[in-house]
Length: 470
Image 1 (cartoon, rainbow, N blue to C red):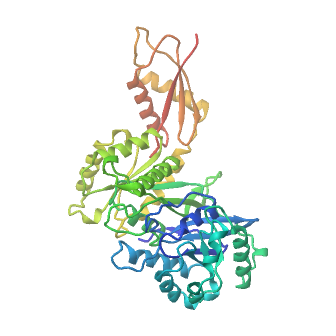
Image 2: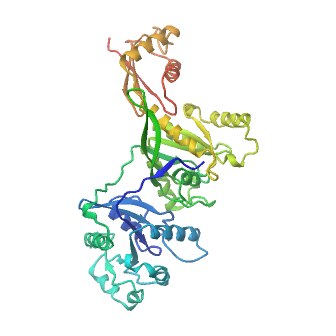
Image 3: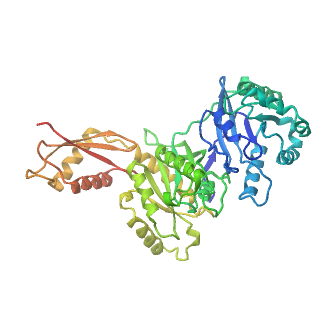
């Protein structure tokens, strides 16, 4: 079944940054979007999957796409995929910024790209980047630039922001020339209300799953380790039924920002600066997320790295859905086979016992649509709040059923009250009588009883103990 999500696209113009490797497209992207979303390095081919962001200029908005650097060489890893991604950005953009390097001048790759763009000249602005000081500006008035037949290059500097304001004005003027009436547009960028990250080790199928979730092949999928170098996000809408205050069903549109992260592996196996930076960005993304789709390869044994990732999720109190991927490669897909695998997987993650498990195939799309209602259940659970009276009745009932267990000391503990301090994730505080202590096992018992009584699927519970003064 196809994904029930629809990619949310702003109704404001889209600008694509295209060019060969190392001309500074990602630096320009970060400067224009005022965000350090794209990894910037001198290593050719740093950007593989297109990055997308929003530019705000004098109350007007632009979608900006940063594409991978082109070499047009068959022996470059993933070059065919990068070209395909660039072609997609070109076809789906209103304006194309053809970025060159003023300090290096025009190279053969620029002529190849110019030839591919010759029928789109009316939508192209030729940029000469890295004009960081006046001494580089004469470099752009050469025969090589005129041979590109893309018009006069416009000098800019992503490093210090030179001429970027004038560039944006030029873009908006060109947009209006092409028929977009920006003055009458009420377009605003959409903001997600839910952040969902796809996390796991390298090669567990995160990117295939991500593409199936959003319904488009937006990120490159390859068996090569660390194909995804940096987090990539796409916002979608998902329609579902909810009960309103009168108990009647209504259709609600939920915005979800899905983020595909780089494969996270052990520090000892990390190779080079790009992987370290990509993993760091991915961990930051996961830490800021509301819900994490923790992807496990059903064919692999659970590793120490898997357990470390699970520990990170527990430490930061993330809501979790275990996505057991590559189910299409398993011979025994019976209910018993599924239960046995789930039991084995869960035995390695005792602290994620609250997380529901879904068996899917990111490659074929098998059961991927079932992830969405699970996300909604977990989202609701994460934001559950319980009233004071209900918690008082709850505490009274469970303490009568099972007397509180004593921790250190000789006095038997007495629980004087419970209250909810926060949600997302839910945080509870229990008042314990002065000079008594509660055994940790009883705290675990209370957590289990809370889960039995209320809806906390996929969500960690934090229980704090407060000693009364007297």
